[in-house]
Every structure is written in C-alpha cells, then in structure tokens.
Image (cartoon, rainbow, N blue to C red):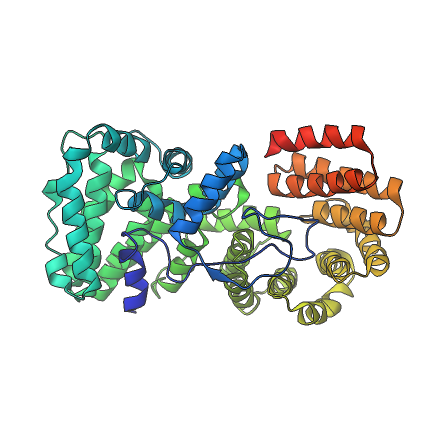
Length: 481
C-alpha cells in the first residue's frame, strides 16, 4: 500500500512536522456537557468545521497567556502535539511570544531528555548567526519538494547542523526525516528506509513522539521495498513506542498517529499485547466498556480515536472514527453501542441534532449499562434544544439507573441535570447536582469539565445577585484556568 502524495506532502510543506493533512477544528460539543466556552474561546453555537492553522494555534495560545490563563494554554498545547510540533518546526520563519511555553509543554509531554525544543529555541536566540546555514538548507529543500523536485530535495546536507548546539541531535533527526520523505516521494523506498532508520535511532533515546512517527514511515518504506517482515517489525515497534505517550492523561495524545497506524498496518502484523493492554485500560476508563477479546482491539481503538477527535473539536474525524469502530466487526455489543453513542455525539457536534436523537432512541431503550450513556446524551440534547423539563426527566432516569453509580460521563450527566433543574426553577436541587458534578470533574482530573461547570454556576449566581457565592466560585475558577 503506497502513501498518497497528499499524505506525504502534509508532512513536508508545513515544515516537515507530523501534522496530518486536513486537520479540522470546530466549536464545542452541544448538549453533551454543561459548557459555555470551549478552549478556543468560541460561543456554544454550532460552528462549521475549519482547518487548523499554525497562525491560529499560536494566536490562541498567545491570547490565553496574555489573559493570565496559563493552565488553559498548557491544556491546549497538550491537546495538539502535532500542531505544537509544526509551530516549533516553523519557528525560524514564524516567531511567536508563546513558542518558549509551547516548547516547554511539548517537551514535558513528548520528550524524555535534554537537547530538546527549549534548548534549541534558547540556542537560536543567543546565537542566531550559527543557524543561517541550516535554515537556508532546509528552506531550499522544502521549496524543491513543493516544486516536485524530489531527488534534488533528497540531497539535503545533514552536516549543516551546528555541531556545538545542545540540540544538534534534534536538528539531525529533522533533516534525516526530510531526506527520507523526499526519497519516498521519489519512489526510492530503500533509500527512504535508510534515511528514516538514521533519523529514528537517535530519536529513540529522547524523542519518543518523533520516533513513533518515524518508525511508521520506516515500516511503510520497508513495505514498498518488498521487505514485509522488516515492515511488520518497524510497525510493531512504532505502535509500542506510542503506548506510553497515549496513556498520558488517560487519552490518546495524537489520534492521527493511531489512524495512520491502522491504515498502514501490514497484513501479517498483529496488535502487540502492550497495545491491547492500552486499549483495554483506556476502553474501561474512557468508553465505559471492558474489552476482553483481542478481536475487539481495533474497534476499541477506533472508539478511543473518536473520543480524542471530539476533545480536539474535530467532529468529522470523530464521526468517521466512531463509524469505523461500530462497523469493525466487534463481538461485544456494549462496545458497538459505545461507538454508536459516539456517532450521535459527533452528529450533534455538527448541528445534526435530529439525526443524533434518532440514533440514540433505540440504544436509550436498552436496560442496564448499555443504555445509560445513550439516555444521558439524549437528555443532554433535549436540554440543548431548549426543552429543560423533558431533559430533566430523561437525565433523572439515566442517573437513577442501578448501574449508573459510576460510569464515564456521569459527571457530564450530573452537570446537565443540574442545569435542567435550574432552568425549571428548582434552584437548591439544581445547584446541588451542579456542585456534585464539579466534585466529580475535580476527582477525575477533568479540568475542562470543571471549568465549564464552574462558569455555568457563576453565570447563574451573578444573574440571581448572589454575589458572595459568586466571588468564591470566581476565585476557584481562577485557580483552574
């Protein structure tokens, strides 16, 4: 299976980062959580999915930092390691005040040792003239790639890297990757494999994020060179390298990586026990499904990819992932249901509330844990549609199910139930449920949910002239943001 020109060009044109082509972002998710503002500062109205640009990312991080919302800025950076890497790669031509913060956060998330992006930015600021050679070489080869002159681009000179820089290994990795991509585009897979191998070896030491992506490319080059066993070994190495990164904060760090891993999976390769363990743990924690069969690993992985896409605001990518998960031949009915509920969430994100509700009704009618997430989401969508009385009835039923004492999404359901009660004039009970949700969000280390719930409580208190309580909530909100 050959990578398409568009797929490879996405890694090249934007500065040789690992950002996938056509990355999208839209507004917040309507109805599934008591939210007012998402990480991008948009209103809660449904928005059209739009491409993410480095400029927009940098602007948003800059704005959050200027507003003193450092925690929110760091969460945004962590959510987009691919765009962060792209911004850092483009630093010579696209400077920004927020780059040092982006470098620090990205390094904590994706690096394991010295000689990383913070060191490179610091060295660049102190000795700009030492980087003239590598900057000129890199820009020349990128221009050749954009012009389709692949073999000329592959002649990139790795020796232009300043040898006395503390981040010299990082720069060499980048140039070897550039060479490998150029060879792959030039249909020279053996030469591409050699370049990717040269890049991946030093990356293994302190650049696990880059190493995982490079090993995927190495496997693709090996496959195109007719070395199926070597391709399968590199692919397995890549996915295992990504497991520790993907366990960060209980979510997939980079859903694009896992999408490409599924797409590039050699026919003879099997998901390793480490990947299976990751899917089982995150499936239990995030999907609320205990995955026991190896046959469900890929279906569960698609579900986790869908959740990660939703977290990033990429509803179209999420819908595709959940759809693939629901149709991936799962043998577990609860896992299929979880993916169907995910499809409904993604449809709601795109403003298709009627379609989302219609998809949820059969699942919501099922007894036990299989129907609780669908029932809670259906109630949330009724709340979003403005029918607070109906929403409160549905959410109450979901929360009173015997199996509903502890499941992923209960905090969201409690927050939405609290808002539904407040909307129908039941203040004491509504605030009780909203504050219970806040405690759950805090215990689950879900700062986004906590911020959204606190903002809703603050808005209610301010609207009802309860100033003393409002001050307390505002101070708590500051510590989270």
